[in-house]
Image (cartoon, rainbow, N blue to C red; front, side):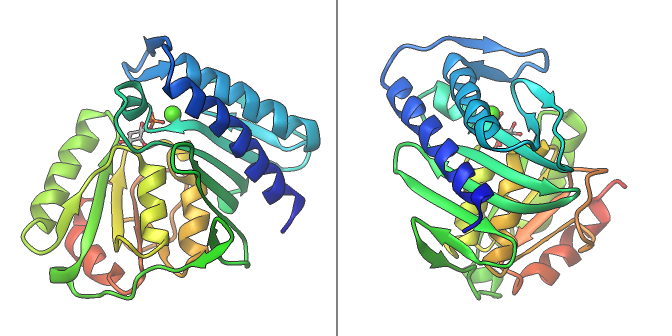
Length: 257
Ligand code: IPD
Ligand code: CA
């Protein structure tokens, strides 16, 4: 395990302790400029993660609540202190801490930790994906009638219309769900409990760590055309690989660019 992965696991653990304690207490909830929510616990967890990461690395930082900090290595930590803030704010499950290390467009370390169940998924380039130390793999299912698929979407009305069209394409063939936390949905795909996730409109911090988990668990992470994802847009399909071509075939024409 590299030092960067150890560092990310440790930072996520510290943040999870604060989130689990905060869940039992009163916390402040405010609305951001884009109308999404942030709680005082998101902010405290983010401060802890950034402090831990900065103590032992010089990588740049991109974090949901506080933006960008420069670094000196060419690598960037991408942090979501709580993915599923809406769920957390309503005491609705699930939600998770998500920390990735990016080398350009490639996610090379991913850690997603659920503070209430203490399940910690982690991966790094070339080493597989693990849940609390045990390897996990995507499913092998390629039969839509036996499938579970997640769909997810950001707040932009155009993206929401796209997702309605995606649902219309898929709902007669696949079993569809959404949990309100892209990061934790990606963990379910990585461990083989769910076969895929189709998403548009999310921000990099929602899925950066999950990208690494999916790839290292044997899955595919592409845009809706089946091409390698790139940061010029937010369209992605993460799947078990076996069902990927069928998903691309049904939704590729809905990707706007
Ligand atoms: C949200 C979650 C949710 C997705 C939203 C995201 P946040 O992240 O990932 O699943 O539908 O678009 O904003 O705000 O809870 O970190
Ligand atoms: Ca968040």
